[in-house]
Length: 151
Image (tube, rainbow, N blue to C red):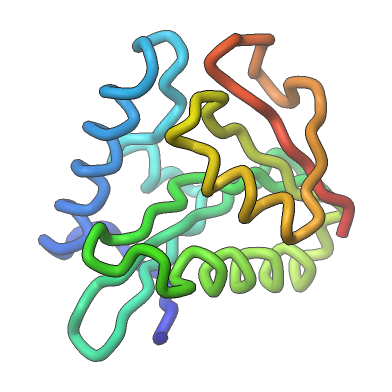
């Protein structure tokens, strides 16, 4: 898989983010949906990567710099036709490697508490993420769980 920084302008990437936003909106009430739209993903504190196999988009992920020592994983998504092929694992590895390279001491994330998010939670647990209290601007929410990992 070729993982590269992406400017979020290609039609395949735009379609994947739209799919991601629609899926998140279908699973959580609006006040509990924390997925970022294209404009927010283009902010300077966020680095967005897309994963490709030849010319086929297979997934994406991003990191938001919360401060010089803490990053937040955002927009993890695998293309529907590539689920359960290790795409998310490889993109997560890439993001964690970059977080370490930047000198972050910690990476954290928010994900859903519902059954549909079980595979994502298990993936993060397998990397050593532990459940934690809300971080940054998040608040307690029955639809969210928060996870963190020391680097």
